[in-house]
Image (tube, rainbow, N blue to C red; front, side, top):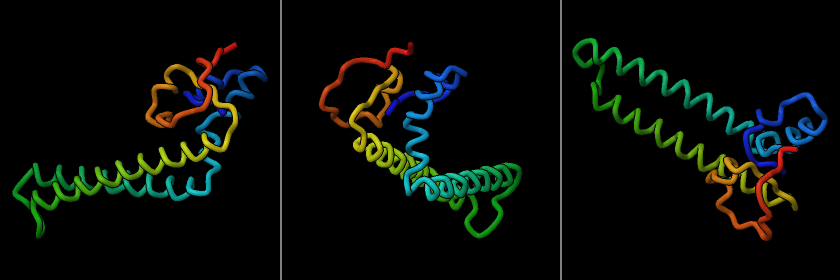
Length: 130
């Protein structure tokens, strides 16, 4: 299992191809919750765009609709809470995937992510991009 940016391992050599195939991003994409996470991400993106559009219409003129500006603010808060919950679920999935592997290598950037707040039994050092 490799933690870090998969784009760093997308070179054409077989070594880089193996690193890419072992990336956390690819392993997490195969998790049973991945489809739900992707669907939720799409929905939140659409909701955020709708809130921005509604806020833009309100800024252009007097408050429209039943809720006015307060309704937009509450909708924006709901979208932010949705994004926060989605990030928490992605972290849980990443930790579940990590805990199912015996060997975990990481770039220094990957090691600093919140996903790796779990305690690994034998930390050895950074991934040596050979």
